[in-house]
Image (cartoon, rainbow, N blue to C red; front, side, top):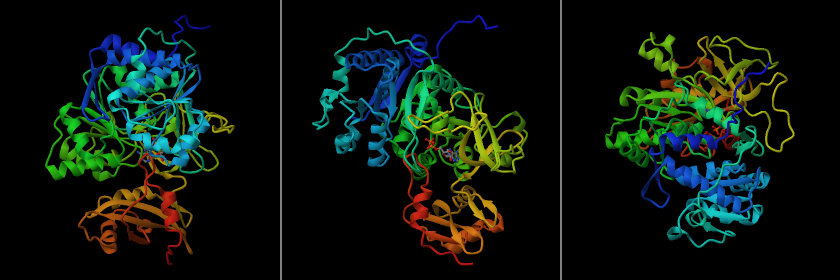
Length: 540
Ligand code: ADP
């Protein structure tokens, strides 16, 4: 027997309708690409999103067409997102930090029809335009006063383009499983793969993101979304913030410590989210300028392992709750958050800080388990590590236009991460399966060595890779960038690590470099490092 409740499709534009009706006055703030801070409201964003939808319809855009955006987090970018999805077209976010060849591959693979582009990225797109011929029109996210001369075909300033229509548009209606958004994984191995979110998965993921142990936003909160909208949906924030009626603060192109600090202060930001490298920049700025963080309550940090010293600094020196999160593009992306729970309240502060180093627990709508190489379930004992598997309504079941089975027979997705899960449900990433160091038949976690090394005075950044070893198969090489002015050497680092990690985990060599390569989403490029050090010989 079926229930007798209404058939109400979960469509992304219903979020904006709700927000405008119930929180229409709520301010939304952008550091504009042109320079000044721009203030708008949820009601205005909806009105302008309706204009985007109407203008797209005039351009002949239809259900299922791919419309690309290459843009920072701004009010105009939010309007285009909801406008595109509200016509039934698919909003394809492009990551401008990818290599030109990857961007060209992605645009062609997606067959993008129209592209919205920020002023900053015009040179990138101009250099590619002959290779991305499916794009027939470019809408530059600016006004006529700031519109540059450009060779892009049919380029028009956004404000002129939406200025030509009114907001008399009715959102399209369709099945909630209709595709809404497309985001390609960074593609550290092989070509990037397209993750195709549906309206339903986006709405559910937005609700999931607002569970109290995740972002838990309310109408009183002010969230600074530093994590870019092109980085897996800004970790749900583009949906979660308007759902809650929160004040959404968008940093535009200003990702440096000073610009971030200014917004945290001027907008009295209560919540924020970004990858660890952004927080390194902010910490440096705070320390150099002797500043505090009086308004900030919560930082969500993820996308790469958060160094323990960062958790301690923000928690102990600045009084801000640090929440370590893990996820991936294929999961929309939230997988876990490491908020303390009731059972951990009786732990002493040190034990709590240690627990916060773990990537955390899964919220409702993410299921998670670890398995061995044969796919057998492994215990949640906090010790055993295995392949981390997930499933849920906002987890991918296939890649866009790729005829390849990606789930196990019983519907689990292999994250390619190796992890432990403890009896209280806290998961800890040991490594990516490609990065774990296999030494004498046992596994060494490169992340754990990096985490410890990052705490060593004089170390600015640390990366660990496995190199071939004649006796052990693989052994760890520790690669370090020194702090400016520091002369820390191998002996100093080894002495610091001694006793902090198992003896047989101690790196065989320590090398000092000026730069460690990062991916477009802020992760250390281990593959690149392995190439760079392929001729480096470890002795026995
Ligand atoms: P994103 O777009 O969020 O960077 P990707 O799909 O590119 O997602 O990468 C996801 C991978 O990033 C995860 O499978 C994991 O290896 C790594 N990752 C994400 N968050 C963390 C974290 N907090 N600690 C360690 N690794 C992480």
